[in-house]
Image 1: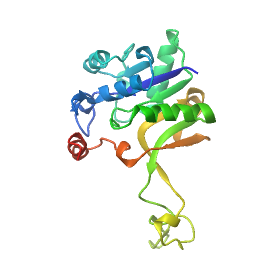
Image 2: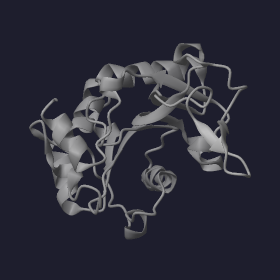
Image 3: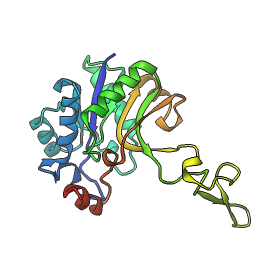
Length: 226
């Protein structure tokens, strides 16, 4: 199995400008994902940064990532999909003789993941052979317990089940993708978006390692460790 550790980092983020190279706990944000991949056992040549910025590319190289191509402008917009970004990387590398059948996608906005989480995800992938292993956390909202949908008259009804569950612990567990780790079979990715995969296995991660940097408030809270 040939696994590519792919780190996506475009330069024109709108939520937090320049966030992928902004210092977080003493390192440029994208450097955390590079170091996680290295500590999880990836060789530097199998850690690829996909970016549209020469500045980001140079920072990635300083920390050991390979940047063998620049991402085209059409794949660096707010509307560009991650599937297209991943396939572009896989196909571009294949054209130069570097063929991978699996992607380990590590988004820079999850700097609190642990290298052991990556190793665990790969082990689960190897043992179950799914379309994808994805990092998840237990969701605080549950369609059997505290999520409601309106009917035709605008009245709310429980989203799933009969509405008789009155304690959260009695509801079936539900999970949300935390964005920290995706181990994806390339063949499956070519056929459909990840949300439509037939066989997705969850790697349940604790809340403290599932946090995502999405807003300035997130950044201030997590950067200070509060």
